[in-house]
Length: 268
Image (cartoon, rainbow, N blue to C red; front, top):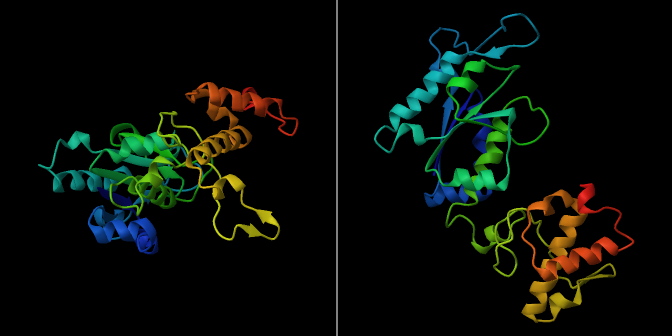
């Protein structure tokens, strides 16, 4: 997997790429990250990447020419490695579709991805309309630039590269993952179950006895129930697309009847 990141702050990524899954994937050769300084694709002596918006208004807007040159240069450099149109060119933008695990899995199937980091008041709309193949947002809020969002996208995708995580089963058991605790298909919207480790008792709070029992079948049932419970409490709207069996429905009905639980999926 290779990421080509177009940014005016390439140094931003130095510490990000030096730790965790990035460091492991880069060292293992499963990942390559090429940082493209947008100013390298300007043609004036001041290396200008922005200008005032037509029609007036506050702030500055990134110019289209350097961005187009940067992406075209990337595609030319990799010509022959596959159809140029197959390379996702993603604009990080608060106006983009929301990044979800299903989107991450979709991106992970591409060998190379181009990420364009916005900055200032925004960028010329022709970048979104005529160059980018997709726009992604990491949430309904506004950042000063797309670098943090690009790092989020890269980490989410990098985790799915085979061999990057020490335990491949971790991916299938992530929140929003596709596999349930017993290996069955559960859709992509179930939160993870609670996790505990030593000591078994801490400040009077004890780990649930079932996790210490050694009964793996009971542990799987407990995890499934607690994952359903956590999803119901924290993100009940996610249950709409969940594939449920009879036991799941009984669990949810019990939760619905529980007096301490003030909400239902319909209220999400």
